[in-house]
Image (cartoon, rainbow, N blue to C red; front, side, top):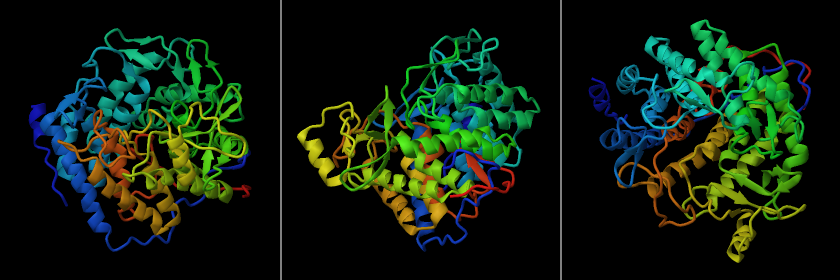
Length: 509
């Protein structure tokens, strides 16, 4: 029966450190005018989604993801059909009602009590993709499908054993067959990026334990001794609750912890300013300590810090920062943060605009007036590339894994400013995807963004549906739908309705 549900899903193409009171600034520009070709570009995104979705159904379902080159499937998210669940909110947003309902009906049949694959279950990935996807779809559809809430509750109950005894920080992995955590070290992103989803679950189930578990982890992370104010070390030992190492980054392993601080404050409209205060402190520290401009092009970057040494590197993952800072800067009415974010967004887009494919790499290096350390030895070719573009692609990081962060921040920049250059950048990316990611089936990651003849690699992650295509579509959509003043996006691109914002008092630029 489950197979029959899904086989029918064929798409029809149609910074300040003290915040006295927070979260009242208007985020979205009131003067956005969609260009005349917006409808055409929505159709283009729909076509990409249709091709991706139908290829997944034909060659990979019910496995998690499609391998486009071999026209086969892979279970990398415990065999719960990650693509289906992660696509739910996007299917709703683009108005594919019949497809959405069929996907919901199939999701209701998934057995989330058992992992379908060997190994453990990631608390973080399962929360942002599965729980977040189901709760967003439940809410967007007007609570029409209670099975989605029930399924999210089953998963959260299974994951809750990650918190052991009085430990504030959960272990990052759970063995579902034994109902016990795997005693691994964690990162602050894994431990501190659960609040949006588990707060929403508490809200809809009436069980506040979900909120308490997720929130106590964040409160613990906030209190940790930090290498720089507001930003803890990336590593965390759940057993002791202590930091591991002293690596500081806005990139992977820390990213969504910092992202969720301001988003949790906005989604809950809490009277406790600790979340927004900590975020503002982290932003202030970053502008004072980590901000760097390249010696070529004066591009605005935010460096990493390793054992007190600045590392002049950036990453596709860290490019979410611009959108997050635009959101927080507007909420706090802080033009300094907003302007920095727009400059950082420009630097990230430059990594797209400078390559042969018009798509940015996984990671890159640059030089600034304080030094050239990147942890690598750039070749003569790298230096020549840097002298032309203000960055160079790090060895081993030439690939594009179908990540959303640059286009996510571009979407925020469009909605915040209404400047059509951001709209046009989304058009450019859409065209690049159609040209360079088109694979034997659907679309695929590529090995080298600076080669027009790059080979394909890997598989089509579910966030291609949840994030990349959603942010592109929304850039071309009526901005009054799913406004940034009405919705908060989780780190997987799933939308949650936010209450009316509180006024901001006493916050200067």
